Each structure stands twice: as C-alpha cells, then as structure tokens.
Amino acid sequence: MREVFVFLPKRTGTIVIVFIVCLFLRASVVQSKESAGVLRAGTAKIDITPEKSVKMAGYSSRTGLSTDVHDPLSARVVAFENNGKRFVLVSTDLIGFTGGTAERFRKAILDEFKLEPSELFLSAIHTHAGPSPTIDEKEGHPHNLEYTKTLETKLVEVIRKSLNNMSPVQTGAGVGYSPVGANRRELTFDSVGNSSIKLGRNPYGPTDKEVLVMKLAKPDDTTIAVLFDYATHATCLGGKNYVISGDVLGLAEQFVEKILGQEVIAPAFAGASGNIDPWFRVLPEFNTEPGWVPEPVLLGTMLGEEVVHVLREIGKVSGGGEINPPDERRIKTAFVTLELPGKPRNQVTMEKDCPATALNITAARVGDIAFVGIGAEVLTEIGMSIKAASPNKHTFVVSHCNGSAGYLPPEHLYIQGGYEINSSPFAPQAADIVVKQATAMLCGL
Ligand SMILES: [Zn+2]
Image (tube, rainbow, N blue to C red):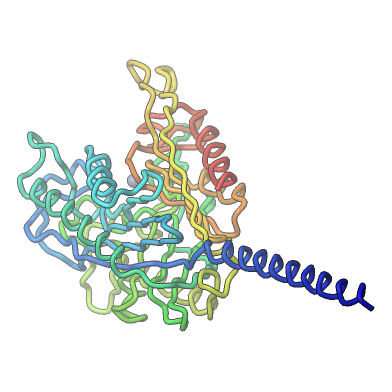
C-alpha cells in the first residue's frame, strides 16, 4: 500500500512532465506556423501622363512632339510582404526604361525603401504612344528631361503609398486566352522569289495566347487588384500618331478598372512579346469615322473583357491569409545579372562583333504564383519555354523589367533574319542561357 502511494505520485509526476513537454512542443509548432506570418499587400496608382508636349517613344522617324492625350498613363504598384520579406511589382504605362533610366530609377527606389535588388520588378507595358523617358542632358528634349525627373519622384511616391497601406490579402490565379496579339514575322517574297521576313502579320506563327490573371482580395473577398500578363507589343498605333495613349495594354487596364470600380487597380505586364504585335498594328491615328471603334480601344476592350471573365472564374480566393498553409503566404525572390555573348560579326551585316551584353533576370514567388522579369524584349517562344519549364502552377513572364537590353530571339530564328534578329545585340545561344537561368531561379525559390 505504501509503495502504491509512493508510486502514484511518481507516475502522476511523469504524466504531468509529459503533458508539459507536449504542450511546449505543440506551442513551438504553432509558433513556427505563425512565424510564417500573414501575407499582406498594399496597392497604389499614380497618374504619369505628361503635362507638356513631349517626344514620343518607339519610332525614330517620329520627330515632333505629342499634340494631345487620348487616355491617361499610370504607374500601378502592388507591394507584397510576409514576415519582413517584401516584393514590389511596378507596372508603368511607358515604353520601357531606356537610356539609363532603369539603373537610375532602380537605385533611387532600392535606396529609399531599403529593398534588395531581387525585391523590385520595375516594368513597362511598352506603349509606343507614350513619352520617351531620358536622362540624356545633351540629346533629350527639355520637356522629356523634366518629365523624367517628375516620373522618378512619382514612382518613389506611389511605391511609398503601396508600402504604407498594407493589409492581409488572399490570392488566386486563373488563365484565359486572347487572339488580340499576333505573330508579326511575316514571310514575303520579292519579284524573283527570294524570301525574307518583314514586320507584318503571321497568323500561323507561334503566339502565346495565354491571359494570366492574378486576383488579390481582402480576407472578406473584396478584390483590390487584378494583375494580368499578356504577350503583345502595345503598338496598335504607329509612328504617325502624336496622341498619348496606353495603347492596347493601357486601354485594357483602364477597361478592367472601369468595370470593377476605381478602388481596384489592374496592372498589366507585357509577356514575352518581342515578335508579337496587336492584330491591328502601327496605325496612323485613332480612327474617328462615325461608327468605327478605334482599333486600340477595340482590342484593349477585348483583352480587358477576357481578364474580367477569368477574374470572375477565379471566384472566391484563398492562399495568403491566416487560414492557409504557411507556404502559400511565403515570398521568395532572386536576381542575377548575366553577361550574355554578343552577336558575332558574321551573323548579319555587321562590321564588328557585338560586345557582351548585361541582362537582368528577376524571379519571385508568392505562394504558387511565380514571376520572371527579364530586362529585354523577349520573343514569345522564350516565354513559352520558361512557362513550360517552371515548377510553379502559374508563371508571369514579364518583359521590359528592370532593364532594356534589346531583342532576345530564340536561336532557331537567326537563320531567317528579320527585324528582331537584325537589331538584337545577342548571340544566337543567348536565349538558351536565359531559359536555363530563369528555370533554375524558379526551381530555387
Ligand atoms: Zn518593341
């Protein structure tokens, strides 16, 4: 009996100790789950329409200044944060960050917000009906120099706003398809039957028709942002047009925001669109004939409607908030600058070899949605290869991101020649290096 009395308290003590240990272990598991934190995001938008007439970007034959504005240009930002790790996506209604502006703006933004290089995607939708950003004091028009300074201030301002209005979000993604973009490498024959590739329309050529949509919503499922990625140049309008516009991608953004309400932002990202133009391309103006829907508006609306269709199919989202597994809230980013081989002298009519060209590649992942930013005009075959090799369910391929190194064509097109090949600084093998690098970065996230 005595022994039993002694034994029972001992056993109870063991049970209590085991219980406490279990509690401790459970608490630490809960803590490690909580340490994955909540996925938060902030959004902001700012008008970047030029206030004065400016030199317009994209066509060297166009020498005059802009005469009018058809629709406003904007910069849109979605900033993500999880456990102190940030990822800032910027979409601007511009041609790109040419003439040293990518380095300058990136430095200003990274310094101001203490971001890592991999945490910033500074991208442009590549409208050819917008201003030409420049910091070239000698060559740049005074209005463009002034515009570019203001633009830098506005980009910092809009990013600050997005970082300051963060709240918990849920994310979701879906895929649609659109015929708005068409391969522009048209095979033509001269009078004696010699073939060449000219810029035109090649409905049989490879075209990535995917419209990738990411929905960002508050925990109560209120949509706050709709990000979409589509591979087309924003070039419904050509070098004879002097009216400012976001062109097809800018008009698609504006359409989505008009339908969903102005509290929602709809940043577009130009996919791998180096050889893709809108179905109606390089037109001289907005057609004002009675009854005619101007082509940039028609195609922008068509793309915007597909974005809204996909958004509505995504429905109620999950994936970022407290109730979801930690991995779906996690942000990962990576950044490299590659030195890619230049085009050899004998490749096309060139007097000397192109030097090696630096190319920035940025990769990021928010849950199961990935992003690859490439600082060049990537031809569509390359984007499709990256998407096919990506380990992620959805992969945004973003051209004109964090740099503007020129056209990047796939190797097999060099034999055909054509505009993108002739103006590319890269050797034929550069594209394969980029695809392998981007894939390795995505797999490492
Ligand atoms: Zn282009």
